[in-house]
Length: 134
Image (cartoon, rainbow, N blue to C red):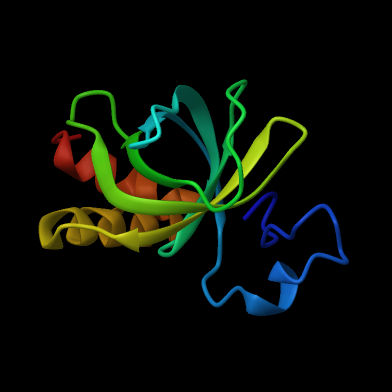
């Protein structure tokens, strides 16, 4: 969601427009990825959903490449690890990634992150103030 509106693909003729089942949220998370084909890189996750994400990276990755993706959603926690993800598209320094497999505890963490992103900003601030005792 950006400015209160769900994100949509830049290319409106992209078939993914009709295939997405989960809302994506605008984020700015550091990430790194690797594959068995020795592709390694870093990037910034710019949108996130339960089933995939968009990453801006200077590393060229070909569609169909299977990756392990690590997302640093919070500074003080270990990275969320997506054990198997596939690159669906890559253009203009941006990579579209679909999540295929996560460990159960990582799936729970991803659900929690996305749930928090779906909440209104004032709800997130309120919970953070309660947690800190203010």
